[in-house]
Length: 409
Image (cartoon, rainbow, N blue to C red; front, top):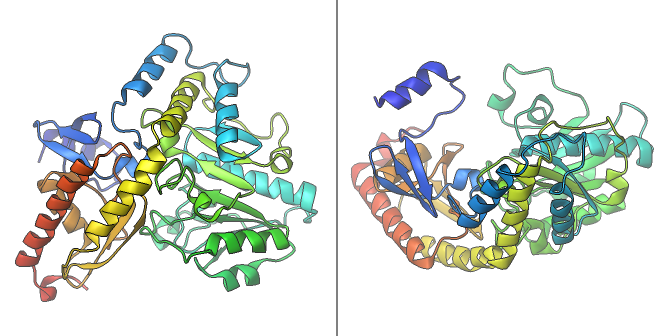
């Protein structure tokens, strides 16, 4: 075993199961391991590296700000936070934003805002507010958020969980309508379920969710930590249906693949429930992360990364759907957010990812049956063509080696 892998296994908690490759450098859409082998990154750190590795504009912003000011806490104003919040609010159509660090922190912020809004504005009796989410969701791993999960492993051994959290089937408008009560504060939903396996709801689903929530005075909160900032071919995935949610959660790509930064954005009525001392974070809104995030948003707009994602994602999907392999059940996606569902009678997605890695392409499985393809948005068609050749060859090789009877059920 590689000594670096041994070192991590010896001293790290075993809460991840990485592919057996040790990466040491990245540039653009490529990564290199400690032995000098080059790989194409089709994972983008779960969509966090949308701008590509070591993006020169982002590195310049990072270094320049690091030499000026990195952290003061929110005990003081800085000259970096305000400009970021102005830009992102205008870009998203939201009124205000609250900065945090990770996506899961932004989700927690949204839950707190929704509950306090329910008590102060909607008039829900104290301690009775309910939050709805969908089966198959992934909103993070804090105690409250895994309490909203339908994945058994995420909950096992971590209870009890907070009350007032309810899960309903995804892509089921009747279930949403039936679950809402006078105590319902918010419906938290991913426009596309990423960790769930790149699950895309029916056309018009999100728009109908918005109409139902509006009719019942329930906040619609869209978790766009993975789908936001160009990943699906729009700046926000909810824009595919012209939906303006009451609350919006951003993270991952907001930090340009360099630093963790997240935001909960909402309309004024929702954000006004917060008072000094209600919520905060020592590192949330730090000037270093804000400088990088503002540059990341400007790159997204100026270099038309959302439009590139739409065009190249459509091309990538069309080519992938022409593949004929017994190992493939379905190819689905939107923009450069693509999943290949593997036929479990033949093999598991992990084995496919390991085979792709040996051929120079890095991805990661989800729920044992889906291979994710989410490259940096700066990828070119020529690079996608190389990825297609690699994927085709990998599936051909696997199909020659495997038989349905060999695969686990």
